[in-house]
Length: 334
Ligand SMILES: [Zn+2]
Ligand SMILES: [Zn+2]
Image (cartoon, rainbow, N blue to C red):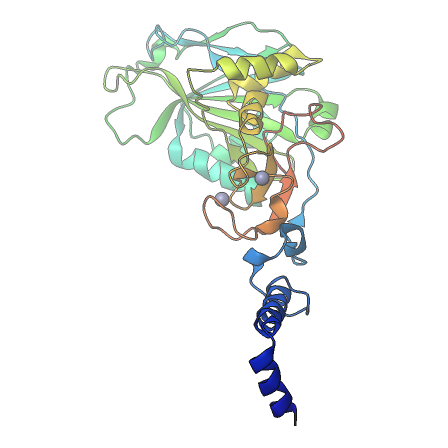
């Protein structure tokens, strides 16, 4: 009977074709748009619905202030025989200790000591870890914010003209900055800074430079600071810098010297999100530390869009409420 009815309709109603096609269309679109709550490809869904329930955990971080700054005053004239001047620029009263001819191996062991045995926050602690493996030591008191250059030289009677051919077993000079007041040592996360300085001599004429700079924390970690290089064409950057207000230019100067300045953060945030090309990048992905996602795109990624590494945790550079308040974070605490 229904067959007969269909056959009759098919014969007599031109609307039948239209109805069948329309019903098929509605059913298909309903299926594709997910009206029947079936699983459909994500690409066809609204992006808001693609929100993953297993998104990356957001880590609580705090800003860490670095009280130490150090630079070579006149790198062109420095040498092992004529000596070298360094200019500290510290936020607190500090002690600057020079170690000439410090053993490479002992210094690396000392850093391991800091990780596993005892916190190196005084020159004595460092000397204990070095087991006296240096040729000459000098100690200077540094007043806070006092940018006075401090000269050091191997004593003339040491007869040392060079540190020999490469590879070397001793660093020419190690400069160690520590906080002089006990209470400062309690209040800062960064308790000391160790700078390995190359000083040219007869056998190795590489220009004078800071080779490594380690920040040692009260939690028993150390971080190797890297040089920061930026585009020479920074007109855009200057315009963004101008819009940032800062209460302490001293902090800024100091951080810039370490290549960890707020400009690093600013440049990052001036860039567009690598995914939507529109949002301001804000999220640091851990452990790879890439900063490439905006607030909106973060939740869609369990892998870093740059290096494909699995994202275990993430934290924002700027909280939404105070986008410019803190931007000086050389270290994130684990
Ligand atoms: Zn985005
Ligand atoms: Zn990455």
